[in-house]
Image (cartoon, rainbow, N blue to C red; front, side, top):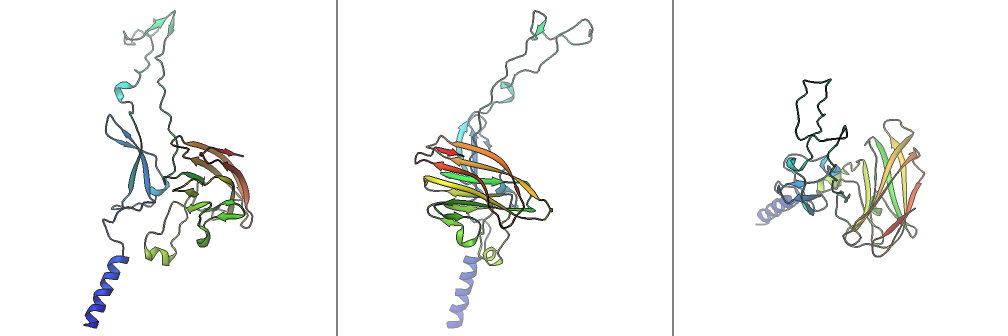
Length: 262
């Protein structure tokens, strides 16, 4: 009986630990999309979380807004040159309007503004992006002498937020193998609650497999701000120096979500 129950317990343990097909998506891998009410289609941006997807993987889709996207019939008509004596073969176009010898172009329709939202729904988010995974850049977000960054023991702080690289360790096997989490993005996010205060944004360009001496990083700061998002971006070039943190900027965040970037 001991042998039978021991074997049964081992099977149950393996069933829990080993990832299985059809499992629900990781809540941290969320795809924010807009719903086109007219066509019933979803529209969203290409995110870093898509880079390592394989057939059969699951994603959690989160609708962040509704809008009516223009259809083909809503687009302005094509511009047609008016008929001229030098070009008798040009077809006549009765819809073309010529006033005082000048062709009148149709008015340009304005497009709805698209507001950036983090790949993971957040109250507040600080991200840096660069182009090549062969360049290794670390993001540090610091407050009151403490920092959140990619080291295991420093990836989360209740007063600052949680670190993310766009990849997560989703299985026990990935954790023990110390799977490579390197992407071209790092972020520190406040998921459930906005934490006001002054935050220092720093970065370290610590390694380049391309033998580059500098890398251009784009920093993006986002605040939900009571469903009226505030977004600020800027770009800096930092030099290769594994032991030196470069100050990118400082963000002062108010309790209502408004922030000042300096």
